[in-house]
Amino acid sequence: MVLSECRQMMAEHNFVQARLTHDFLSAGWSVHFRDAEGNDYPLTDTYGIPCSFDSLKQAEDMVHQVGDCPINIDSLFRFAGR
Image (cartoon, rainbow, N blue to C red):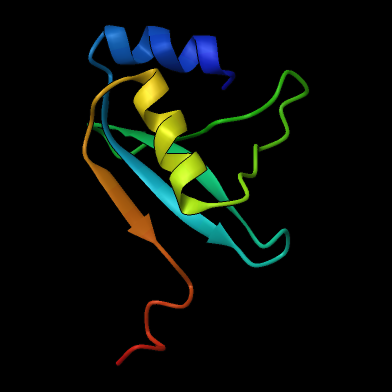
C-alpha cells in the first residue's frame, strides 16, 4: 500500500499496529501495518515494491507520518544480545 492508502486506512481505524522488520537482503527496514484480523499491509512504492528505509529512525518516522499506533520492532539480530 502506498503512503496515501495507509493514511486513509489509519484514519478509518483499520490498523492496530505497525511492525518494523529488518530486511537482511537490503540491509534496511521495512514497514508493515496490521489490522485487527492480523492481515499484513506492507508500505510500498507506486509499483507495489516494499519500501526499504536506511535506518530504524527513518522507518519509525514513516509510521508517524501515517498515524499514531503501537510499533513493534522485529529485528533478525534480536537474539544476538542474549
